[in-house]
Length: 198
Image 1 (cartoon, one colour):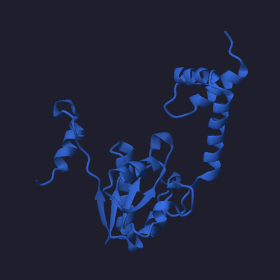
Image 2 (spheres, rainbow, N blue to C red):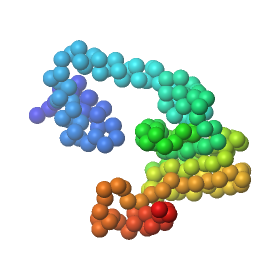
Image 3 (spheres, rainbow, N blue to C red):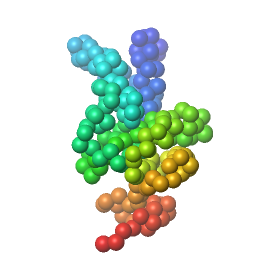
Image 4 (cartoon, one colour):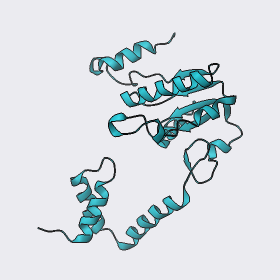
């Protein structure tokens, strides 16, 4: 059976989203087919408003409604700390913890030669300019090969330009509630390296 062109076009658009495969794209499309038109219009308006009303902060490259963003504009934040993350969602996760009150720098990705993403495709080189009044840089990239490569690149970048700045890496290891017997060797090794005195 051949699908109507408008349905096929929407399926194709959904398939372009990360994590959405052909079956999920079809399910989403056919779900929306039965949603009242007023709800579809709200959905479409929200998409357009998101693109119109969000900006990338010129300082930290986080996403917000103003430039500079809410975090960069907050005078109560600790301006001696800079946490470097891969994505804006990482900022949300760290903020939810309530344990960090410094500044951020969002890379919008990680170095990944297999995906043709090098340092020039990321917001990497303006880090050196931001570190002038910073006491500690926290590397909070993901514990993946790409995240580790990015962290090492940043460490070398800062060591050349700012050897006096303390560079730390977030701890990695076993999540709370996990069983040691099911953890892989790398996770256990990280947990052992990141152990602390009780």
